[in-house]
Every structure is written in C-alpha cells, then in structure tokens.
Length: 372
Image 1 (tube, rainbow, N blue to C red):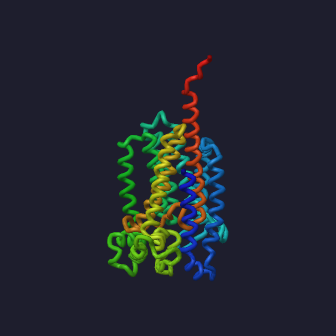
Image 2 (cartoon, rainbow, N blue to C red):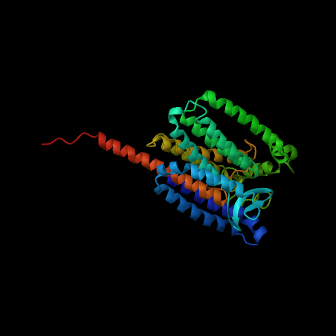
Image 3 (cartoon, rainbow, N blue to C red):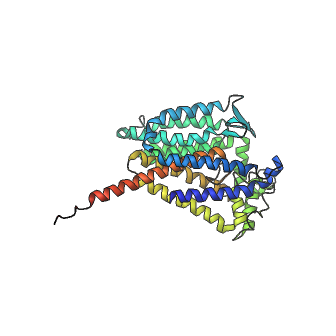
C-alpha cells in the first residue's frame, strides 16, 4: 500500500509538472518539454533509489549514520565554494554542473533522520540524561541549521527541526527537556523570520495578502485565485490560466494551486488523501517495526514527508506563511524527489520487515499438529 501511494503521487506529479511548467519552459528555453523531461529523468533515478532502499537492510544504515552526517556537513559547506557551488536567485543551495545539480540540504533531511534515530538507540539507557542524547542531537541540528539558513533556506530548516524533534519525542526524551527547547526554537524562528527583509515581507503578507496584492502578497493572492477558479471539478487538465506567468513557481512551490485550478476541489482532495494515507501507513509501519531503530527511523521519515506536505499545502491555501518547500513526490525538483523516494523506500523496507516479523511470530504461536 505504501508503494502504491508513492507511485500514485509520482504519477500525479509528472502529469501536473508537464502542465504547470509548459508555459514557463517555453518562455525560458523555447521548448515546452524541458522541465517535464528533467522530471522524468529524476523520477527514473528516484524509482531506482526507491527500489534499492526497499531491498537494502535498513539496519545497516545505523553504523553509517556518523559518516553520512559528516559527508552531508561537508557538502553543505561546499555549496559556498566558488566554481563548485551553484547559486540561483540569490540562493546558494546546489552542487553540480549544468542541469546535473542537487541540493545537499535534501540529503541532510535523510542524514539527520538516520543520525538522530541511531543516537537515541545507542544511548537508550541514558535517555533521561540531556547531556547524552538531547545535547548532541541539538548541537548537530544547530550546526546543520546554520549552514542551511546561510543559503538561505528557512523552510528546510523548519523541516529538519521537525524531523529531529519527532525522533526525540518518540524516543522517550522527557517533555520537561523538550518543551524549553521548543520554546527557544519558536523565539529563534520568529527572530529569524523578521531579521531578513524578504522573510519579514512574507510573514506580513501572510497576515493580509490582499493589503499589498501587487507586491508582497502577490504569490499568495495568485495562488488563491488559482484555487478559487477551479471550483469542484476544475477548468480541465492543461487549461489553467494562472500558470501563464501569473503564478510564480507554478511547477515547484505552488503546484498544489495548479492542481486545484485544473482538477478542482476533487483533485486537490485526492492529493491530500494520498498524503494522509501515507502518514497513516507510515506511522503504522513505525508501530509495527521489528526494532527500535526501525521504529524511530519510520517516525522520522513519515514526519518529514507529511510535515513538508502540510507546510506546502498550508502555504498554497493561505493557512501558513510561504516558506518555499516543495510538495513531496509532486513538485518539480531533482534532488528533492530523489532523496524523498529513497526515504520512502526505507519506510517500505521497515514496513516489510515488520510484516515478516509478525508473520513469523504467528507461525511460531500456532500449536503443533497432533500426532495420530
């Protein structure tokens, strides 16, 4: 079922990227198919990563957590090195050459999930000692968060904080330790949101986007127009008007708005239902995981993907400030899709191992046939 949900979201993503990106692709490259061709390439790579992750024993990831975290930290620094790091629109988030680039911050989500889960498992006997579990987890989170904020990318910083927080909570760290940390994080997030002019403008626009609909509130207003134009069944696939350079980032951050316009409330609710189903199945896989590392890793991955989906959709419908995080499996984006697919493969792996473990337990519990 998890595999089916992931594949359904990927198919919806390919179709909607083809529709949402056609105009901007034609305007930039003189070819309507550039973005969808890239998305197809990354989807194929993502499916390979998904398949490998489903077959690779997730338990072997635990001893790799420290090296993976170190590699991720190095890559997060490399993005600022001239000639290696790639900048676009004032952000330094990519490493690579030409169209073959990826965001180390996307790898950081998976690396932090594995690292924090491994840390809690290794030090389970000292879970109540904040110096043994909470402190090292927060140190790594802050270091990674600082590097990501320097790119700058506050949306991803929020997501990685959710991942680490979910693992610590599920791992048994006491609330009297977590609540002060959450309070400090909320204050720090508010300060950072108002520190940069563009983030402050986004936050103020969220409170009343129509107060400055032609400037700071433009994205939010155009997103609401797209959603409102769709009605119950939409204007038809490919027939949307907002993607004609009215709605910025229609194929990335605001692809949900295009779904709502072209497929209507029904299409939008299907996407929401698929993400909700992924969440239910993911947390069920966590509860049924055969070991503690699998349990915590499943919690981390599910919280990451569902939480990121909530942030993206919340921004599109005006319930949350715009942060620029993609819609998992659906938005255009190579490295985001690749590492999300790899993480989903790990989740399927944990689910399969849990199902196999329950099956073996049931067979062992059956009474032996009586001899005649």
